[in-house]
Length: 373
Image (tube, rainbow, N blue to C red; front, side, top):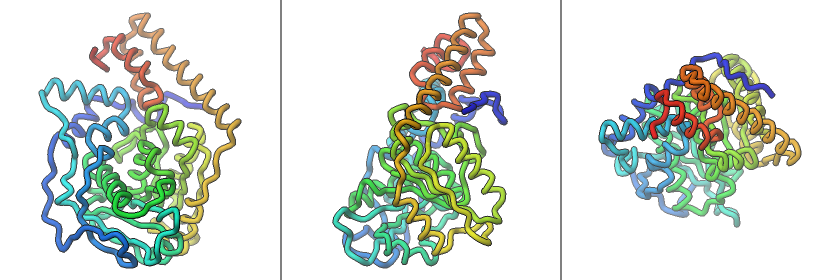
């Protein structure tokens, strides 16, 4: 395993990168009135239905999103910006009364353990069920839910993430859902967001279906990254019990390359339950009915990692991180603040929550503008 901290991109400038997110999360979003929407009725199925949800869960609160999806130094920057500007995060980034979702419930009664659930993050703005997918959802007893106005044009932290989390929280509350079979998925830019959500919420989602869009872990990306590793306890769960299924057309060479990079980074971070599939004679396009069915079959059949392999990989990763943190501590002791700052930012980007709380202690002792006591 080799984590090169001399990355292909510049280290994340924490305060600058987070300022816009703070501005978005301190605002209440006013949306247009939903058209013809209604609450879901438990037991109704077989037809996609537009709905309005009403249940607010701490799962998609601003505080939870910041804690789960930002790195330790980015979280510290949020606290500093809020204190300096005398602002507070609003409780929730979305107003459910003004949001619409599409829900599809299989026509057959749920199995004894309950339906599986797929939350779909779209790249487009309309809430729609892709053509040909409903027979496969019926076949595998899966509820499908997706938001309106949650596409690539929307902000990640203040809309796309909370919309997906709100969809899960409400469907799981309204319908008999098997909590061990809840998944996140998406297409193109939506797939990239789905992977971020899967990383940050492995206690909710047991895997991700990634169609023609994925990024490596720990590298800043134009979609609002980096794909940040969560706290140690959550990432241990992700390594142990999350399944990733990548599906991309064989002619979509750009995304096949990004898939390969993402899969490689997952293995370096000890995530082994990964499947990849190239759709024959397809470009950058949504999965066909057949490919969707194959992907669901893979997603629903996890392969637990080998305990010895996982333990050895975790030990190597921990030693590697400890070595980087020790290097940063040595630079601070030598009063080399600029070099220490650069290294701490790189560690924060690459290891995310795995580096806490030690990275915060070092950032405060550094006195180089990363974290205030």
